[in-house]
Image (cartoon, rainbow, N blue to C red; front, side, top):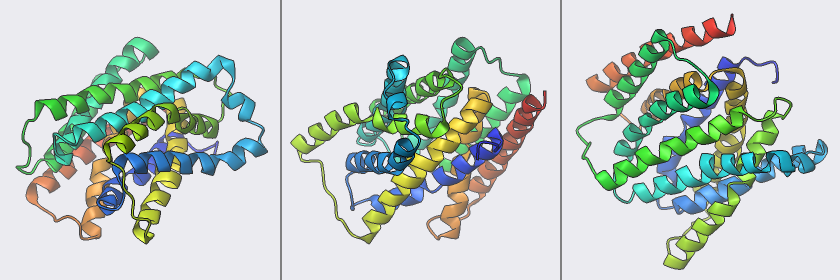
Length: 295
């Protein structure tokens, strides 16, 4: 796995995350979103624990030198953005949220330039613009209604993800990808526990422990919060932050194709147009990434 290219790792991450909308639909009415996030984080920690113990990484996980960075990655990479998203969805629609999340690319370019010294090329900016445009065309279907409170919360939350990734980019090179992925889950717990207590107090927690719930939890905990994070940090270590963020944000295209195949969505003209634009942008970004790795 360590010999895998950053581009291959990134596409594997995208494939896993592409199942999120389908799993999200399956979780509706089965488990409270915040409870799913919390339990999935615990499942991911359980997934990584045997590796941590076998490789004697527990002291490294809580090492003083990286403790603050791990806390920032867990808090700003998982706990805060997921919590803000849950609050925002009370005021806006999932479609609005998906479109607003494309603003993450703007933060990515800013963080990459000022914190990491990554200077974007014209082709990179053009490919990024096509991906954002294509995804927005794909998602918009006359259901966009501006809601400042909810939409601005989404726009605000996307910077936290980029801060977490920027800090991860600065971690010592010798740290294993699995250790970083473990730390992201472990150090997300303090804030998540506070959020859980709030929802428990307000009566917003519920779960129906049926087969559907266990299936969603298994996907989220093992695939999305564990394997996808390993692939993400592999790509992050080997490629520029802004480049991989642009390619990652094209995952709704894979989600759309999957939804069509499973009968959750239908093929419409504007969706085909959005699909084509996004694929063109993704192709341009792939070329940019390959050029960078061949230097």
